[in-house]
Length: 126
Image (tube, rainbow, N blue to C red; front, side, top):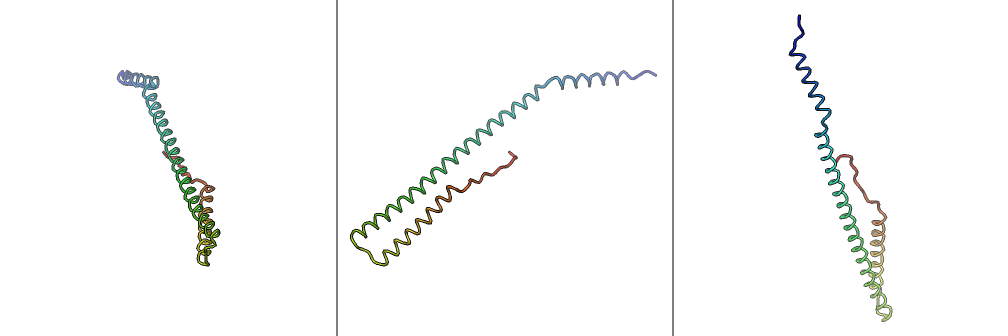
């Protein structure tokens, strides 16, 4: 009985295909290149998002600080004016005390917001 030449030929062709597949990393190289490009683009998007968030936080803090400063300035002006002119009654004193309390609360919230840790969602999936 003679060994089937077709089996040997098919085996040899398969061996040749396997050798070419393992020697040719061109397609794997292309895939690695795509992954590298994806990584670069993703990192750039994260950098832009972080920069945008920093800018928004800066604007928010500045706006809150300016609002507090403005409210305090208006109140200071009124207190000094009424004291200098000796023009006040119990209602004025009560209203100004409420305004002071309101500004104190706002200041605590503002400083608390600054001290509060930023919540960053971490996820290993991209």
